[in-house]
Picture (cartoon, helix red, strand yellow):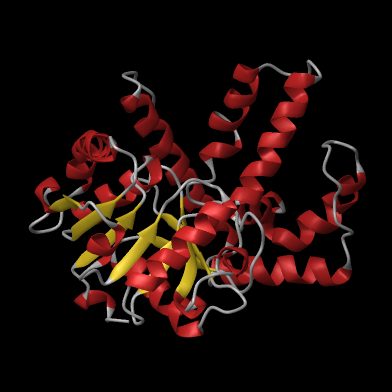
Length: 317
C-alpha cells in the first residue's frame, strides 16, 4: 500500500448516507474522490449530501485545495477505483451483497490498495469469503455522520494481513480520524455493542411503561452523556471511587452488579476482571491524579453545556 501521505485519491463505493459522509470527509481533507453507486439517482443524492455537509466542514476547517469540485462520479466500479490509493466500501448492510461487492472491488483494484468496509456489524471474515485476495480487506467502521464524528473502528479478519490492518489505521489517523484498532473480531465491534446495550434497555423501559422517550433522552443528555465527551464510562466510574479510584468503586459497588437493574446479565466480578479494570484505568489515566481528572472533567462538562446551550440558541453558565 502507498504510504498514507502519498495517497491523494480515494474511491468511495456506495453513495448513501454513510458513503456520502465519507466522500464529504475525504473532500474536506483535500483528497480527490472517485465514487460509484448503481442507483440511477446516486450522483444527485451524493452531491446533495456533500453540499449539506460543507458548511459544517468549512467551520471545522478545510485542507488546502479542498473543494466539492474534486468529486467525480463514475459510471462503472472499475473506473471508480482506477487510480485510487484507498477504497472505502459503504454498501447497504446485506451480507450477500457485501460479499459479492467486495469480491468485485477486489477483482478490479491493484493488490497493494486496501479495501475497507463501513459495515456496522459484519465481521470481515464473513464478508471476504468469495474475494480472491482477502488479505487486504478490513473493516473501517465509522459513525454517522462520518464527516463529523471522528471515531473509526478498524479490525481485520481471519485472512486479513497485518499490514493491511496497520496501514488502514495509519491512513485513517492521517485523515483526521480517532482510530480504535481492534485486537480481534467481535460482532458489532466495540462502540455499537455499547450503544446497543443502552438502546435495548431504553426500548424495554418504554415497552414496560417505565419511562417516556423524552425522559430517557434527558437522562443521557443532561446526565452521564455530559461526562462522556472527555471521560468514557470506565474513567467515569474510576472517579466515582474517589481517591481510591476504580479499585474502591468495584470493591464498594461491585455487589450491585447482581441487582436486577437492567435486562442484561452482568458478568461475574472475578478478581481477574477487577484487576483488569483497575490496571486499565491506571493506563488510561497516564499519570494524571484523581484530582487532575476531576478538574479535567469539570472543565469539559462546563464547556459542553455552554456549547450545547449556544447551539440551541439559549444561554447557560
